[in-house]
Every structure is written in structure tokens, then in C-alpha cells.
Image (cartoon, rainbow, N blue to C red):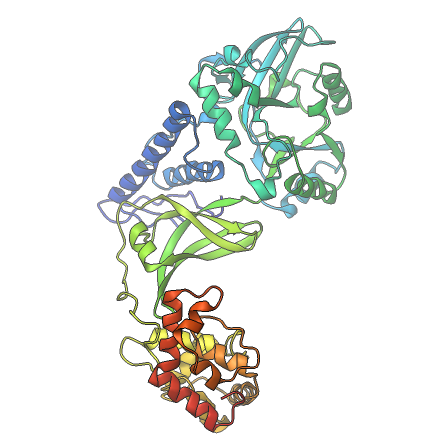
Length: 561
């Protein structure tokens, strides 16, 4: 999970709020509504896995949604519904020949180092954490006898019939002791899968859905592989166990288990398996001691002798904390979602763009909604969709529709302040005059102080005038005045871009008078400019307010005007 939920619950009587620190501030009624809605959503997803054979959501988002419900249930135990069955942990009445323990998850490298140090930094081994569904296999006299799902760790579903259809799981073992218990992961075969680039690829959902449906068709069975990660009743030391796995035909699994001596060793394997190809999806690594207690002492709980350290999720579930509407310099409104902080690829993400006002109106995203977020190009947060909506919809102050003309709002008049500020931000940005230190807050302070009423009024401000702005000290006023003076010497191309024509132009040696004299046919003939933009260019150069700005710049001696 990407947020910490405290589970200590404060009992509140009556109909008032029922919450603890770190838990949602919900009334008992709302807690019931929200948890029931999420429970039902998880049930629908599970139904899609079983019946339709596809994953309606990313595996990581499914896991996080399931964990979110578990956290809410601890916050609100009185109102909590039962947990839905997890497909990968199918319940059943068949006792497994060895308990499946599960794994505790380490949050970071510091925790890993502490865990390793507590174990003397010796006899430690690392494996990829295959992202599939767990299974326990029993071979008697070299022949497959049973296959049991993880279930609750002790009892699971009998998967023997399905497993016999999977060619990757041998019916007979060579060089095997009389009784062999193997634990591993049924995985979806993926050639050269790179987790950092490809994410989970819905691999676990495909396996889970196939096993839950019961009968495996030949094509599906051929896509399922096996990664053996333990031999519970095998030899006591890891090297001998690995050698035995190789002898029995599980060399590919054994080859993915490596001795490690330092946290750095573990981190190198984690990075390698995250960014280099594997034959299946993996959502992290597992570090385990070579020697551990006998299998008959294992319990259905995370052991002390093995832990997991998961990869950064490719997609995370995020809670919307606010919705911001931003009017751009051409009048369009973009929507930014404020998020409770989440971590993506070791980066903390606090907001994500939703795009246009029309898209927001269609999706109706509000505070409290849960959304999926990923990184586009491993750098920019990207909104991937609404996962589910809060049942009690929060009020949102929606601005008026975008203005109809990109030539509106050249002054901060009523209804135009946001768009006018966007024009100033563009003017001072890297595509315009590159005025250091001038963001929206600084321009807003000058507007609020009554010093700027038009796009070029800042050119008249000196250090003394800037010192009068509330919050501007002498040093800031001096640096701002210097930045304004430097902007005057920018090339004509930068000044032209700063005024914000509808199309970014390659102007060559042209001057303002040359551009203003060009006709509609010329603009339509330019690459990337169609009828609409050509008319916008004609309107821009013919607009009296733009003409007045060009006259001002010519009078002030700005090159090109």
C-alpha cells in the first residue's frame, strides 16, 4: 500500500463520526455504504475473472483495492462486511501436504538491511517473487499425487485435475525421493518480460481466472508455467535442495535462486529482475534463509526466515483529495486532481492532470474517489481511470465554461484573472522571455498590488515600485527588476512567442510587419496549419489589442517590431 492506515479504533456511540487517526472520517452509515460498495466491486471483478476470463483492472490495483477494504474493516469493525474471496487464494476443504506461510513485506532497503543483520548476514538467498498463484504439489514415488491451492495456508482447493493438464508440471519426476512436496507459483508464460516497462501485464489474473473456472483448455494450459520456490520436505541446506531440484527437472527454477551476503547484493538482484527480462511477471523479490524449521512446524502466517521486498508498482490506487480547475491563456480549462501522496517508481506523486473540463464533466471525479495512476514515460504522472467512486459525493465548485475565443482576457477584468495570469506565466516562461523567478504566484502578487493591468505593464516597473508589493523585500525587488531588464534584450522570436500566437512559428528573418501582412491563403499553406488555425492567425495579427501591444514594443525599441 502507498498510505499508512492506523488500525486502532476509537469507539464512538450514537450517530456521530466513527474514526481513528489515519482512518477516513466517516459516520457509521457512510462507513457501511463505502465498504459495501468496494466489497461489491471486488466481487464483480472476481466474477469477471472466473466467468469472462479477463482482468477488469490491473493486478496491482486489485491488490491495493483488496488491501484498502481490509484497512477500512479494521478502522470500522462494527460496520465491516466479510472479505471477498481472493482468486489467487481459492478456499477449499483439501488439506495441503505442507502449510503455505505467506510472506511479510519489507518497505525499503533500510528494513532489508536490518532483517539481514538480525540473521547474521549469512546463509541468505534471493529469488524473484513470481506474480502468479501459489500451489502445493505432492509427488509419491515420483508420480504427481495432488495439487492444492494456497487457500488459507492450511486448506485450499483441489487443483489436481487442472494441474494434470499443464505440461509445465511433470506427471512424473526423475531421481525423486519417495515423497516430495513442492511449493511454487503457477505463472503466465511471458517471453522476455521486463517488469519495469511492462508491469504485471494482467498475468496473475489470467492464471487465477483459468484455475478458478475449473476446466483448462489446451491453449490456456500451454500458457501456464511453474516456478518452484521451495521444497518443504527437502534437504536441510539450500545448496543440496537446489541440486535436488535440478536432478528432478526443475533446473530453470533453481537457476533463479542466488546466495547473497550484503544488502547491496540483494539490491542488485532486485534491480536486475525489475529492469531485465524474465520469463514471467514478478512483483518483487524474496529473501530467505537457507536453513529453516522443518515443514511440520510451519504455520499459516509470515515466517521469520523469509521476507518479500516488492518492486515499485507500475500503477497505484490513489485517493482524490481535491479538484483544481485552471484556466489557460487561450481560455481553455484544465483539471488537476490533488491526491493523497502515493509512491510510483520511488517518486512521490501528489497530483495528476485529468485534462479538459469536458473530460472531468464526463468522469465526474470528486474528493474521496479512488483513481488509478501510472507514470507516462517513467516520468509524468498519468490518470488511468476511476477505480471506484465514493458513495457520498463531495461538492465541487465548478468554474464557468471556457471562453469562446483565444483572444479573450488581455486584462485581469471580472472573470478574466485566471486566464490573464496564464498569459503572464506563458510570457515569462521558457518558450517566451524566460524571466527568472516569475511564476503564477509572483505575477499574481503584482496584479493584486495594482501594478499590472495589461500584458506589458511589468516593463514600466522599477525596483522602487516592486518594493511596495506586500511580501517583496529589497533583495527580491532588485532581482525581479534585473530579470525584467534582461527580458528586454530577448530575440524577436521569443517576444513573438511571449505574445501567444495560436501556432508556434518558425519565422526566419521575418519581422512583425511581415507576419501581420500575410493573408489567409499563406497561413493555410503552412505545414500543420489548417483552415481553423489559419483563421485564428489572421484574427490574432488583426486584433486591435495585439496591434496595440506591437506598437508599444516598437515604441520601446524591441528588436523586430
